[in-house]
Image (tube, one colour):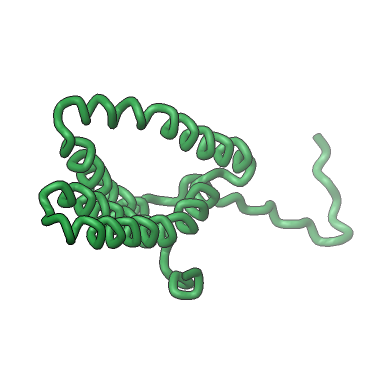
Length: 150
């Protein structure tokens, strides 16, 4: 997969992964209304699309978390990135349960909606200026020049 994604901008890979996630979640949402024999096939298809979405998006997501961080603060940014995943893993089961209380389709409608909203948001990152200024080195003094007194 990494060879196929080589040369693809990370923002586009993550956006494609989000679009594939939306497709997978929509597939899961359609399963309750499917005829009995198609449920198994639909479940496998939705799981394969979801797995493809994660495979496509993960390398780009990791690359973006590094590229958008100031070099002097990359460690902190990567730690916050990992912490955000942990917080999400802790909160999402409760959120999806709250949605499920309103009906079994609600989580499966919410997830593709969020995934589709993320697609243009990731593509918008391509238009933003670099997140940190480019630092230029001061020109070196030629050998033999005197240092200013100060």
